[in-house]
Image (cartoon, rainbow, N blue to C red; front, top):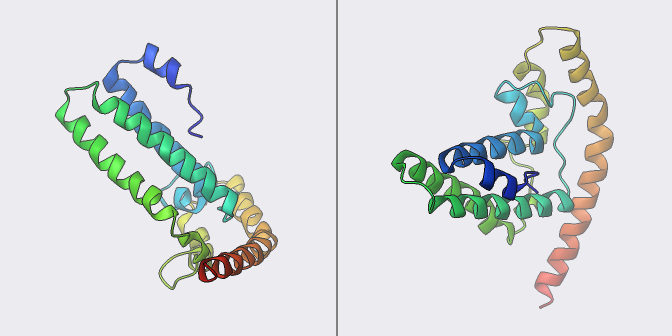
Amino acid sequence: SSGINAEYIATTLSSDNQINRLFEDYWTWRLERSPEFATLVGSKDFNSILETFTEKRFAEDFNSSIAFIGRAEDLQNKTDNVDLLQNLDFFVAEVQTFVDGYQFNGFYFPVSYLEGVQVDFQRLAEWASLDDQKDYEDIIASSCCCCSVYKGTLISAILSFIAWLISFFST
């Protein structure tokens, strides 16, 4: 979930501030869910962890995305600010892309030559700013957990994909 009490936000913040809060909440959520992306854009908050690739994680992302879209659509009727309305339209379209694509199980195909764990992992040290000892410790921590985390996740994803293929082609 987006982790925010919507009723509290609605009663405490003006509509325009609620929209900005939505964008901030989504950005924070996005960085938490994709720590390598966070490192790439300069956030050090998640340098010690790696992204999780499980069916459960993607189901959670699907539900969170629906919640974010719901918040955005509610806010579209509460502001006259043309710039914010346009940003809300772009936001909904962007998040809707994941929601619409979820049914196709694209998360079963995480490996490509353009992006993914196998490409991004080796670049994490390049993306991270190594300013102090904690930065180095974070790189070591993410490196140490890589093999054990991704080996189990990859095996699970392959088995789930095979089960999905069997059910897809047997109908």
